[in-house]
Image (cartoon, rainbow, N blue to C red; front, side, top):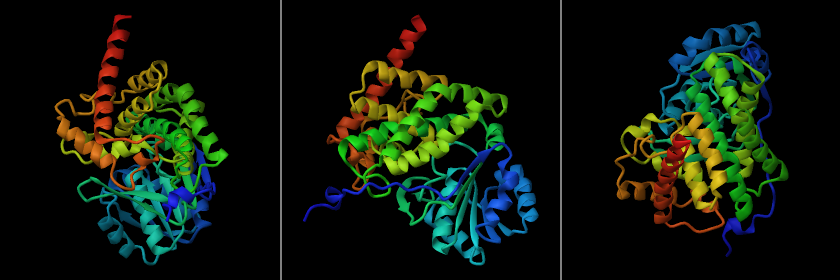
Length: 376
């Protein structure tokens, strides 16, 4: 009997019901959430609630949507989802308000309760908002599994004014997560593997991935500088859309490959690497996949240039792994190659030592590249 993925011939594209983006979009949140249900469970952490809870509250009250605020505990774990499900049994709509882990938790709660889901990201730091899946971690923050849902969020509402107030490091992390999109999707297309929706990528899925990368190379630094100044500009709007909508649709309907699998491998290590964001670890994973893909030097250095300008980690030292042993890196590689991981979506076979070598090679290439830049 052939394995299931050998028989996939259908193309599949999935997406959220509605995507809305703009400065002060949160002022219209009540209107849009009210279309999904008149009573809401709002999941947010203390920081987000103090920063923007008032604006959301005002908007919900104006649209006569009743709500209960549930404080997010900090980790997208099975325990946290269970706890919030118990709080939300009366709600007609679940609202996730915050960063990637908050949003992934809200999706899990909505799925369990069988309610519509509204996603309100306060940063553009990951491509989590639009997707019909959550990345589940243990209570200690180690990657556990992907959890897939029947539906994408019904509403994704992105307030670019809020995002412009967030630390630029979050935007840079989102740019890194989004730069993995096309690198991974094109590998999936080459290998004939399945995307996250369980089918082959459509032309639309492919086009979105390509557009995502194009926008980022053209606008990323302009957007990052606008974020540093705390202002919303056309470049910021374009990059927030690339980080959120284009990368979200692109990774889910295009597919993941080695970059995210290697990120998941990094989460298995102890120590200071946990101080890094999801996107920062993905940046290094993307460079590692580019090395494995035999990417030409000029192309590899195009990515290095942008990552370095955005302050993303391109060396093992920056990844807080300067002291990592080969045994440590073997653990990363073995985790990245676990059964069911997206590293198996490549057109070529990988052994753990291949990944270890590529991780070390990224460090060597980046150091040599920076030394040459310095001489010029």
